[in-house]
Structure formats: structure tokens, C-alpha cells
Length: 158
Image (cartoon, rainbow, N blue to C red; front, side, top):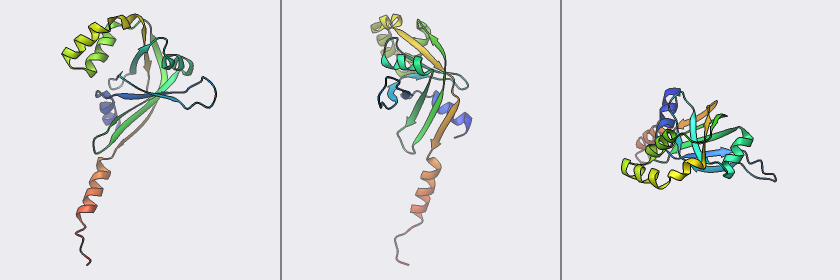
């Protein structure tokens, strides 16, 4: 994907999968968890979570994380970013929490969710990450080539 395409893709409301090094010892793989996130082209990736969760503790220790967003519909597409934590906002700005909620829920659901979970503001933090490394793929061209090759075969024995 071109830079503008991958930034537009990441800015669309998708559930992201956050990955962070698990430094708790032993032979642990990275922690990988689904999250709501915010992103505007050219900006930081924003994620909110409980201050004392395992993922928050690991993010503080690692100082960086990865996030992958994908489209499961055909043709498959994904964007993955990785970079340093640039800020930890504690407490959470209510406007940031509201923006994340409204990104994922319709207005009526968002109002109800925000009202029902208002106490989260005192227990959550926001991590901001500046994307340094990008990986992306859009299999539309591959799918078109594959479909074209299949259409050219009529099944005859020649």
C-alpha cells in the first residue's frame, strides 16, 4: 500500500491487535490482545486501558508496541505499525475516551456506554505511539490476477 492508503486504512474504525514484549520471565511469547484504538493520518496511535492491567505494565516496561489492523473481507488487507510510546496520559482526558468510544459505537450505544462506564476515567490511562515501522498488504491486485488467470482457462483438453 502507498503511505496515504495505509494511513487511511489505519484511520478507519477497526479492532486492532496490540503486541508488546512480555518481560515477565520464562519463555513467554509477546502479549497479543485486541484493542480499540484511535489514529489520524500523520499522528500517533492512541490506546486506552486500565492503569494496572498486564498490558499497561508491559507497555511501560517495553516503551514500545505493535498494532495490527486488518480487513477480513476479500480481498484481504492489513496494516501493521510499530514504534515507541511517546506519551502516557494519566488521567485519561474525557474527550479522548469519548472519541474512542464514538469511533466504535453508534451514537445511542456510545452514550449508554459512556454513562455506564464513567468510573473508568479514574482507573484508565492512554498510551500514544508514534509509528516508526509500517508493514501493509492489499491483496486486491493478487486477487484480480488470480481471477483473471482462472477466467482464461476454459477446461478444454485442447
